[in-house]
Length: 196
Length: 203
Image (cartoon, rainbow over all chains, first blue to last red):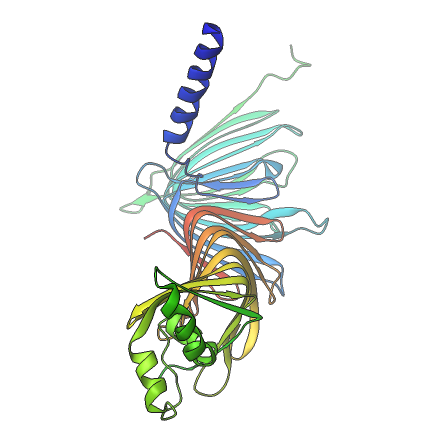
């Protein structure tokens, strides 16, 4: 009898506690297939049914930058402002077609096979899925790696990374001060398995 | 002048608070008048066309409404603009309202409706409750609101939506989810156009 009363009391208390909880706010989030976009506060989104594309303009929140994760494209972009276009590729898969990231940009690209990894910082970044290029501009820093080389580029005005290649291909245009190139590009060959 | 409203209902019940004797007499007196004026009164509507001069007894009734509660079964409400284009149409299981003095207000229950743009229906919505303000040309719906766009098949769900016909804007709040095919957007507060083709978020 006493035990039953305790159980009823506990259930009542639990019910009261659950009821007293404020309703959970759902996180602000955009999803398109495996693509996930978070961190934004102000934004505009537009559906264009004729081209089956979705255009976004996103501005970061106080706490976090805008973050676009496109795991199928091995890509993570973070920035204060992003304009993006989402749509479908020729295999009808949802993809990030284009992104223009501005202010405090960081890009991470990590493809497991054939292995390519890239971490970059820049003022702006333009990603084009059709051209499979990433164009970084303004005080660019890039650290990249594939099966054969480790590359570091600093103080470059412009860097174009060709992401579709099996091995890394990077074009770097140095920043200049009084006509003198300031850029630094260090390419270090990696030990291959055969050499070991 | 804001537009014209129409109300149809299958059944009309009027109840008065604590005045059973007078209630029957009042009911007979205002029953025919109510069918035409109830929607307008309940939703604070003002007719768009110049109002037809009413007879003195009718005017007296609508100027000083009896303290009463109303229930209309399966009403259909709609509003047109001054050119006769439909702005919105709402069908409900019931309309519950109350009046007293010059005030009247009401709520539609278990609602299904259409929101129009340029005289064409563009958004179908369902909700537990809704009300409309014909003067402001606004419709508010709450309680598991779901809407689907006829233009792009976009789907919206929210706890509450406020539609402003004059601005072509729909303000959705509470557990907002907008779906454009595979594209899904979640937020607590989102502004959209009536056809759900564009969305604006944040301050």
